[in-house]
Amino acid sequence: MGAITLPARVHRTPRPLFTCLIIFGILGLWCARTFLHQLWTLAALPVIWWDHSDRFLLSAQVDDFDITFANYSVHQVSAAPYEDRVPAILHHVAMGGAGAEAHIEKWKTVRQTCIDMHPDWEVFLWTDDLANQFVADNYPELYDMWRTYRYPIQKIDALRYMILYHYGGVILDMDLQCRRALGPLRRFNFVAPAAHPTGFSVGFMMASKRNEFVGRLVQNLEGYNRHWLGLPYPTVMFSTGCHYASTVHAYQPNRSELKILAGPPNNFKLHSLNGHVATPIFDHLGSSSWHSYDASMITSLGRAKTWKIPALMILSVGTTLFVIRRAKRRRGMKA
Image (cartoon, rainbow, N blue to C red; front, side):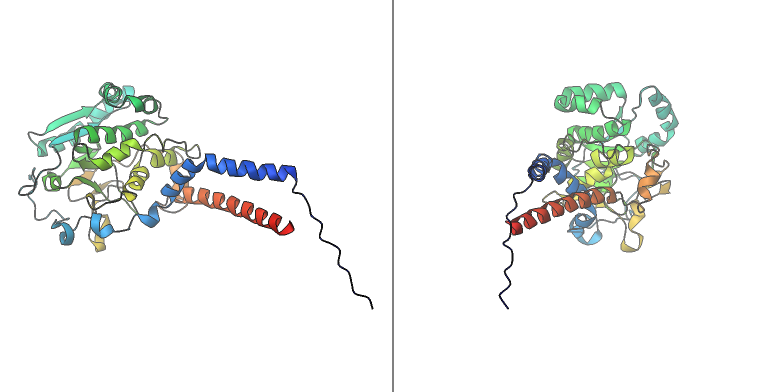
């Protein structure tokens, strides 16, 4: 029998449409590189947050600090014998147009508990008019973005970072009732309470004036200003809220000065401000009333795991890249 002759492999020129799709796909990824980077940083927070946590979580071992506050006087307004790095200033924000006055009146007594606990401290109550003038005067490059935020809580969150950077001091939600003075914490350049399961809460923060990290929170506002999936909850959390601030924290080269106040291993949520709770320093009387209709949908993906949204989006992008790579490899095999 004669040898079987195999037909010669036919060289097929890639279809122009397919080639165009590949080119436009690559160009699209290049143009979206900033967005993809931000998406990755947000999604990676649960993985990287705990890196070197022994350095930034307040503790007796590292900081010689009693996180239960049992050994500090209720009325201690200074960090003495340590240096007071945080100025003696209390900030509260009450914005919301016509509803702001009712909000101020509702929480007037609660706010007064913190003022009474810190006699002789400077006190600021940031209303709409004061906030508008402050941002216009000190952050004109961010004013248009800040003024046109879609949700009021975004304006409040962003304002927190701006005034904390500009003045330093302590910023508190209106619904935080003080059980003791915050003096022992003034020895640190930055302090915020731990959130669950990762990150920290922005409802209570204290910082030194012109704090570098707080400045980074201000600087990154514009880059993270996106409407995530058209839903209020992820839009707020990922553009100005706790997840945003925690992400910026997680990527700082030295986090040892950015202290997070948590509890002991057997009660890690000791200082958590989620819902109506009592902590060693506060009674939190509110319950995140800004959460919109989509909050239950987001949390249904997994309790407090809002990171799943960007994670799923990154998975989709990764799948697309994989398909493109496989297509290019097959095209190379046919050549």
